[in-house]
Image (cartoon, rainbow, N blue to C red; front, top):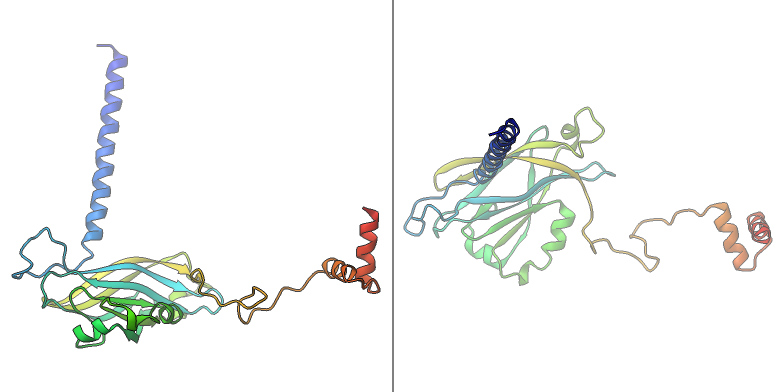
Length: 251
């Protein structure tokens, strides 16, 4: 065997080992994310260990309005237990640097009202949806006709302590701790969430006949644009219009 062949095989072995380490690290990350679910409760309908259970937290991130500076926490919680009697209650949500998130009930579906005995209670196959007030008002408007088991809350955060010494915290990350009271007592789930700028949902902004959002003012036209408009209307007496006509003649 030549030295070149030995080197080549050694390089391939090194790459294979590095790939294995990378895959192991990736797998560890997936396991860590899966571990962010509260463990399932053993019971007559929940005897299969492979069946996912507990509560799942999805789409968790902090939203900041860049204009007002107001901040809110967005997330949804689903009870995935197999047992009909496994109920979870969200006791609190603590955000690093901002303290406890203030949750305010907005509305709920008929199925949730029939299944729940408390405001922040999450029965089996039910969901809690939390967002900033404007968003919750929009997608909870059809709650009466929604057959799902859903309760809607709006949230607010202390934006001043969230940003600290900086003008804002957009683009940063914070630890968020969810505390639940469940079948096995008090359980906590900690997530590392992103702080993002508020972006209106498509179609959520009401616009007038002029195409502008309600309350918005049109941008002021420059002298050249104003003069061109006057000239187009036949009003060539304004200085801006005379300048615009002069520019047209030069062309």
